[in-house]
Image (cartoon, rainbow, N blue to C red; front, side, top):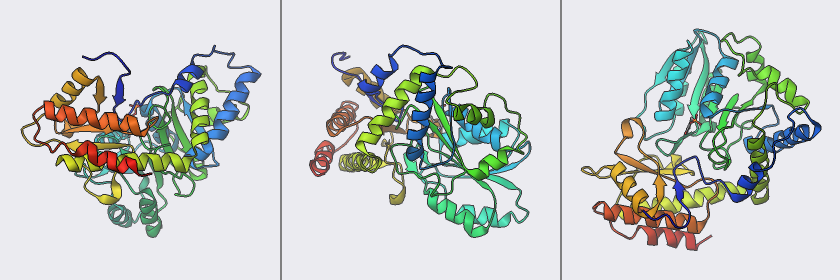
Length: 387
Ligand code: PLP
């Protein structure tokens, strides 16, 4: 095992935390009821708006993304409410399971884990629901287990075409601040996000961006909630505070990460991710391997899931890459275990980090005896040579 140099953390989150963010987190913790803290909260909430594409409230939780999933459900829904879920992969399935455990009536649109949520299915299911009993549509924007990005504006248009009043809840845990996203413009009611991917922070913070319609729904929603309740948080935030002891040092890190995103510019951040995703796909195809995502319109900008040929174990390749080149790649999750490995290319990444990542994957494939054409890295470098 090579232990010199930096570890390559090329899983699709948590991502590499920039030194600037780590240094910000290392500052002394301050009084969370003092004036300096109020400035921090206000600065963060102001800077978060453009990242979500919203002028509405954004609730920050000291929790992982799973907590923000729960918050979105318990704030907007009541026991027994029907929700329409798209089974795009492992994370969509986990969110569905949670909805079921919370006592919601879950209708699942099955999927093959190679495509995003189908807008035509949304139209069909909502048209069939003449009594408007479906209260919310749940979609994972970027399915981290498959590298497939659902087309949220098309889902929105499909819902609108039916005149159905269901809320639209969207998980952007692995797309926010990596892939173009617009909460207000796309008519999303609750956007769920996490700190540890495009936002370049360690795990531990998560978010709900809330539309006026979702806020109105929260006033009558009856699922039990206490810690996750938006109302006391939004109220305390208006004064710069939280109704509990917040994760002060992670908030320092968040402020620094938001400054970095602002300095680069969101359009440039999105373009960088797309360019790296494109270079990665060129490498995979030049190796003679298959990208899991089966629709050209839905390739993820933040990660690529690679199918390994029959007779080979993706986790064995990952183990070799870790052992010999000190790089972590994402494992296959759920029904994809052993069949895919995932290359994370999101967060704080540049051309040479991606080139190194793809070189490590190529060497790992060769070392594992996978029959590939070692032209992958060259194909990626040709793409990276261009702007
Ligand atoms: N949703 C997506 C798309 C994810 O990728 C993840 C985690 O990777 C989650 C939700 C769950 O978030 P967490 O593991 O932070 O609880």
